[in-house]
Length: 369
Image 1 (tube, helix red, strand yellow):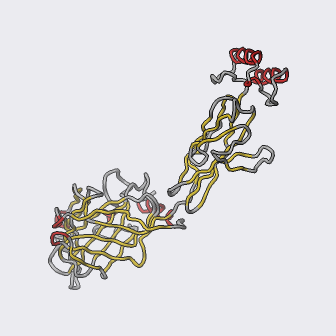
Image 2 (cartoon, rainbow, N blue to C red):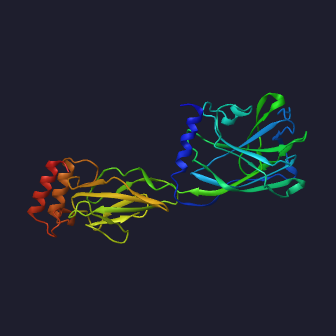
Image 3 (tube, rainbow, N blue to C red):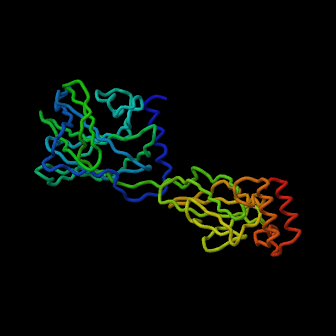
């Protein structure tokens, strides 16, 4: 996969978004007076020769998106020549290296064949006084910049704010605090790139797209003794907050699922965490009825829901002492309980302790559960 296709696939994910809400992705406020400011401007030759200046420079600042998002408002701070507006580029991390480096490094001289995720020129920039004599710039984008969430294949995005000027002058991007602590810079006259130890003053905001809920890890089958407690767990995916609702299959109607409640026992079982990622199943009384119950969890968020694959919970009557094994100790303990009239010896659940219970236990013991 080449560099362009490596990140182009990431942009496709953003188009699947159906729901969004206002969000601030980066909030790096300026140091008063600009702090350590860095050149970031391109000379626009007023003549026909398209000459360049050695002071031409580009600064890229990194940011991370947790979900597919659209940027529609940008603020930045600095001082200097920018009477022709600004060029704003967005590039992914260079997929050919693990180093902190935008893919845009291959395009600083143009004609690279690479395309940024976004490139716009803005002239309708609003300005206002910034702290310590610098200038605040802001722009509302009529067409938002839509970007995919960052992941292992693209761990960060880079945005370049570049002043455009026909003067023999520079525009300085102010230092920012509260977010990234790095800047990547190119200066034409130096013929080199720099990784700088401070971030730039930048605010990015817009809408975060809602990724539909899904099930990343379904619950696993489990075995529990009649007097024990089983825990079934799942891991959801998608934009938060995520909701969880556990359900039990109606044994009389396969495929019919009944929502669980912590306040409502079902089939001799009581539940805890029925609205969370972890469901605890315990006996309502002394013990649970022997058999198999099937559970699943529905994960939901603002833009959808998904049900996990079912997990079977086997209530093992033969493991009478609940040590996790079926062996002679279980048989011996059951006989003692039977002779003592212990309610736990009523393994067939008919309310009586009689020969049918003993016969039922022997059958379970011989079957191994």
